[in-house]
Every structure is written in C-alpha cells, then in structure tokens.
Amino acid sequence: MQHSLVYNKREPLFISLGTHCETAFQIKRYTRNNEAYFFDWLITRKDSYKSLFLNNNEIFKSNNWEISKDYLKVEDKSSKLLFQHEFKVINNTSNHIDPGSIENHLPLASAKFKYLKNKTLNAIKNTDNVYLVRKENFDNIELAWNRIRHIHELFSPLNKNINIILTSNKIKEEVIKGKFLIVKNKISSSWEGNNESWNRVFKLAIAHGS
Image (tube, rainbow, N blue to C red; front, side, top):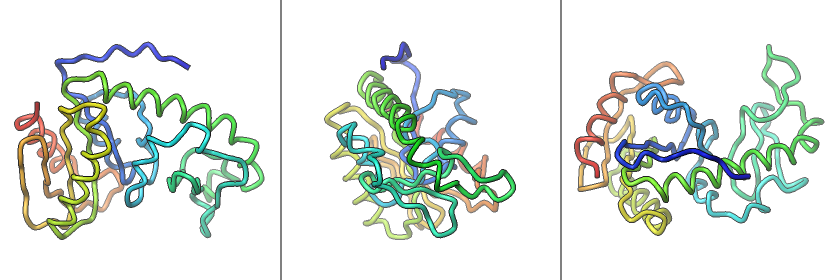
C-alpha cells in the first residue's frame, strides 16, 4: 500500500520511538500534526524500536504472540513490541483483550502496521529536518548515550542528518551535542506527561537541530 503524504522538508518532523504513548501524544499536541507513525501507540521496550527494520512477514505471524497476565497487552514475539490498543476487548469497563479474537485480527493488524512501517521509514528518509524522540527512565548518562548511539547506528543510514532526542524523568545531567539531546523531563501523574516540560524539550530540540 502506498501513501500520498507530501513531506515538508523545511518544517521539523517529530517521530516517536516510544517507549509509551506519552511521547506520541505530546508530539501531536505540540506540533498539531496528527499523522500516524509506527510506534505512536505501542509500548516499545528496550531496543524493540529496531523492529522497524524487520521483514514485513516477521510481524504478526500466526501463533507468535502472547497475551499479558493482566490481559491488557499483546506481545508480538518477533518484534518484542506490546500492543495495548490494537485488539478487541471483552468489554470497555475492564479493557481486557479478548484472546479468542486475536488470531482472526492478525491479518488486518499486519496490513495496518506494514503500511505504518513503510510510511515511517519513508518519512525519516525523505524529510530534511527529522527528530526521533524517545522517553526512557535512565538516571545514568552513559546508558543514555549508549541508547542514542544505537538509535543513530540504526537510523542514520536512512538519513544522515537525523536529530535524536532522549528525555528522562530521572536523568540528572542534560547534554546537547549537535544533533543529539539528552533532556530532563518532569514527572507527571498523568500518562499524557507534563505539557510545560515537553514544550521545553521541543523548543530546545528545534533551537539546536538541523
């Protein structure tokens, strides 16, 4: 499936790499750009963002998934991604996913995420001023830099000018080195995050980006 999105090379494009829905929510709130990308509403643990480079046939294979003990998430075993909003729930009160509906939904989910995968790769490749944004819980600056190095290693072949933003509630030291930013983010009691703190993240990124 092809999409007709035209990329504005002059405007900054922020794309979420996880780890939770908060990152995508804040990007859409701040930029008012509601375009959907692959990781927007997924739980992207550890380095599961590298799933963007999996073969299309590796995602959503039959019987290659596991439902969480609380019945709120489905793990795709190939990608290690957790899907909390993709599958049919038993009822809206509990939000428990219906295990019996998962296999039947896999072809539709596969088609949807193949499309989003290609759309995200094309957006990164064809936008001059692109920012990959990820929120972690690192309190160690070296771990944060290791994450940035890994993201850069994976995605820079698509676009050598990518900007990478890593934000954490726990980091004690902020660092800005060219296109790489490690920025502190305030703790919020809401899953959406702290708007004021995220505004600062985006403004810093634009000020020091491409």
